[in-house]
Image 1 (cartoon, one colour):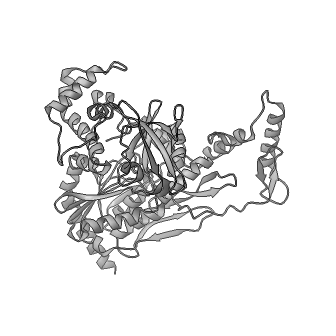
Image 2 (cartoon, one colour):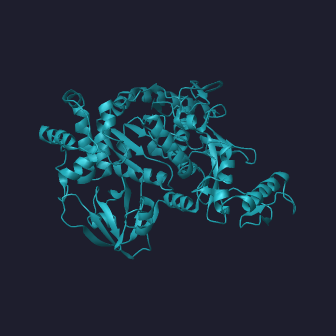
Image 3 (tube, helix red, strand yellow):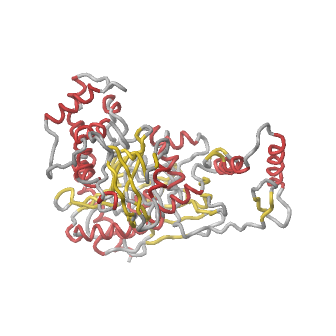
Length: 550
């Protein structure tokens, strides 16, 4: 689904903290810091020269000393320098004057970022979220302790180890659920239709997560979805999933990077490189203090023979643009969709002694043809930058060519070979709630299944009785009410059936099954299948060019 501008902005602002670094967690740039100098307030400043602070640093220290001595209320040095949760303080403010992606992350954010990069942690194994003031189960991971203990999507987590969760947000509840492997945690959930809370003691285990899914969208055509590149197991999971699928039988592959906000450059290189020839450039980057680094492909012979179509949209960013740009520049894939976000900046992690970290832009990255795909942010607010107001802008001066000589442009993201405008949501569809998180279909499923275990036959589709029940459910809601006409409901009937099926599949089967059914009906996926002959023609041309250059 196309993400609205305000939602995209909020998502990308959050992603600048979670997904910004394209370096792996074990690769930290050198900062060349001098000796620490006390500021007199618990904050440690570092000199850049000998024992004397630079003029600018002395001014900062002087200003803070005046504030600390004369401000009407007591001053917290941490708040003054770090802000509230890493927002608004001197250090975040300084970083925000540099570029949209340099950032300060709090100790809690940095710890979570490292956990997500490792794609493994110890806990009960479920995704949680907020439904108003309640912390709810969004997804118990299949096979994880929470799943095996009978927790379900839609459960409200009311207590942990007999401690009421009222007033806690999802981050607070997540901290209570995590713990050492093999240790018990008692979880109480309130389930719609159940007279009493469901309480179970769960033994924490090792939780492995994956953001990759591969399946046959039709005979001979494989569909590979990569949700993000933030974890260190993306490339390996891709290898495992395609091998399990039977890559030797693939006649065409659709790589879906829509909504993929990026992550680690090593994972992007690993994924893109398997589809290219050994030694071909995937991406390069260089900066003022960074020597140029060139990342080259390590090919998988099984991935060289079939055509590819890559799906992207305006929120495909960073590492997903590295993959798309390399496959496009080498004429290896036909790109379908919208112009991508346009993030071509490289962040490195600078850990701080307090457990926090700086994510500092140290370089620009370039596609194999030499394109810098970073959008210009110098003449607009960061809000407009994140909202992607100038989505169709390109730098007409940055003209490059693919291996076969096709023109490509830098400065404005990756322009697709074939444009696809995702249909916009109708007013009725927008009233149904956000695509991500609790909405009216989510709440209807709570009511429909109640305390019963969700069970559906394979291939189930909502019939007229289920759709009518949903219509009655909407009309019964009074806080808030949902205004709609019979004509609006009828006009959106097919969309309603798809959303009901998605929510019910999510509960009766799992997340991947729900999305697979949705992708098979996705008009853009169907267009990708129709575009496969164009991808085959491009592959034939690329193979000729590669053979001539050997």
